[in-house]
Amino acid sequence: MKFNYLAIDSKNKKYRSEVTAESRDEVKRILAERGMTALEISEVKEVNGVVDQSNVPIWEREFGVTDPHEKTLPAKKVLSTINQMAIMMKSGISLSMSMEVLLDTEADKDMRKILTIISSELYNGVPLSQSMASFKCFPVIVISLVAAGEANGRLDMAFENASEILHKELTLSGKIKSAMMYPAFLLGLTLVMIIVMSMFVLPSFASVFTAFGSDLPAISKMVMNFSDFMLAWWWLLLIIIFGVVFGFKFLLNNNEAFAMWLAEFLLKIPIIGDVMRTTYIARFCNIMASLTDAGVSILRALELSRDVISNIFMKDCLSQVIEDVKIGTPINVSMSHYPVFDTILVSMVRVGEESGMFSDAMHKMADLYQEQADENTKRLTDAMTPAMTIIVAGIVGVVAVSIVMPMFGMYGAVADSTH
Image (cartoon, rainbow, N blue to C red; front, side):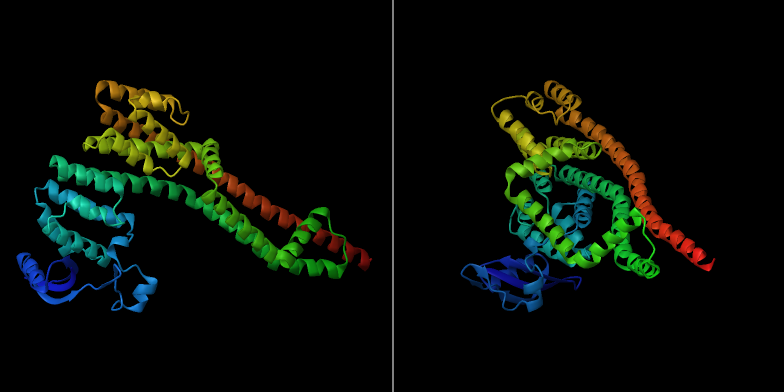
């Protein structure tokens, strides 16, 4: 049976969690062994195998995830927790004491609930990796590293490797996001400017030109016609945009051939494809290096490294590599069959396999491709910024010319009428 409890420790700190026990008295005994005194104990009721949530507030049932196992937390919060564990365990602090320190210092209520459950399960003899695996917030790679650390007795190194991987992943994602922010801002500004000018600015000038009865130049007619179209048919444009987006997502999720073609096509786009490919390979090499360092088998490391790559074409290539490795084919031989893996990567994988220094080779490749990813990201930013600036300037110039040219015609008409 499962029981929810509210308990207090010697420092008058309250803990709320659940524990599996045969009776309420056993719950009290378990809590006493942990140095805590039970304040409230209630049995978790289940109806047809589903936990009864009748006592949970309706706003939590309807709008929030109440089960800590299903909670998703920010990557920075998970990294902070893993990093603290790495520091404490490298300092020689035991696992149980490290968990107590984390519980005492954790301010985030969701992470606190998760840590409380993990601590409770550790007291009941559940392995740390098994307990962590039941929570959605911990990446599979971290769990595999912890499991390997439990197997070889080096949990300190496991948490250190996990912290390093999460830190590199966050850094890589942050660089890509920051590189794309300015071009995305310019694109958004351009769209807003087109909408505002078409629906508010140009119609007022159109009424003035019509009142004077002046002939409009071709460019002015084109811009005014576009403005009229936007005013009359904006709802149709919204329907078309929604239909295109919905259709694209439907194809992407339900048509494997289309999704595979798109993934391969994205890798072939100049500059953008280079950024994506080098970023994915840097991520692959970094995780392979960390996992093999931790004692994870090559096959398992390949599977986990494949799963962090979001491009399904590259993922499919790695799946084929894994199948080849299962029947005894060297990794470098299998990789050489797929152009997405360039010659230098294949050569270094071969050196690592033949020399028995595979993880060292992967570390070097991770650093190399990380530098290439940074350079390609900078190239992308350097290329997109002036391109978007030219586009914005072009749109403003066309609109300005379309307004100014009829004005000169109006001034000429006024001057002729005065003579």
